[in-house]
Length: 144
Image 1: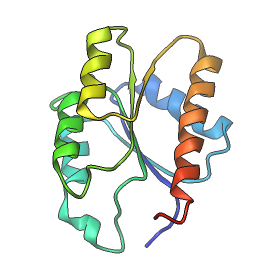
Image 2: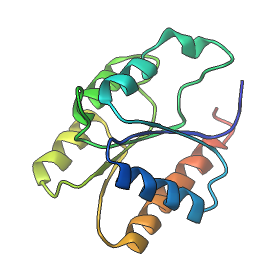
Image 3: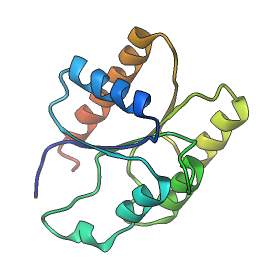
Image 4: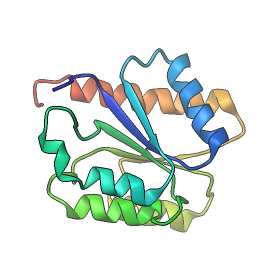
């Protein structure tokens, strides 16, 4: 099995996908990255039985937009937390929503953190770096 740190990104907006790829490049991320543009595609992949094989593994971190098409981020989070195989995957919600209700809903559903998308790229990059590198450090412990 590949031991590289794997990030799944649930994001349908091409600009936001490019921004995340730029963030990962700027923070010298050396793991693997895979984007899913639809919530249904992401959920199908996460709940697939193929994660028991050596060719495929669950992500070490999921960065998730709330507003994905077909199945939204909250529904994905709810499904992950209800599934024994996926319940402990750290989930960063990355959302353009400034709604306190969205934040509270995601926290109740078990997100690890909530990052509001912003037009301030440097601030967004610093915040993403903090959480991505933090989860990489957690993963590198002898617990796993």
